[in-house]
Length: 165
Image: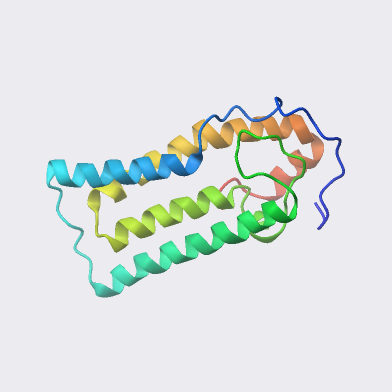
């Protein structure tokens, strides 16, 4: 896991993780479901002050920054961030030194930040559902594919770096 990606033969486009949807839509869907829940059930607004509202905004900005850096690394390595496309490299730099899934972590942070910024109890209530959906429906499939694709180098990476944080 040096700075350079391992040199691997190109593989067939049909050999890729079995994820057939864009993961950001999972987060967007749960945020919208939370907002709808707020409206339909008349959930109370979270009792937060101005400082906490700004903390929510700061969390969203931090998540966006992690997302931008992670996407930049994908581009630098010639990787496609769409999870249904084949991988040619294991990225272990930048935020990938601390999390195997910094893009999903960033989206989760944005979700939490939005809930706080909007003082939305409904949006906050759906954070665990978004986490579980991404963990089980996306990450589990990606990790199975990556273990098959890269073998021992990926297993070593998994031993060194946690799935989330």
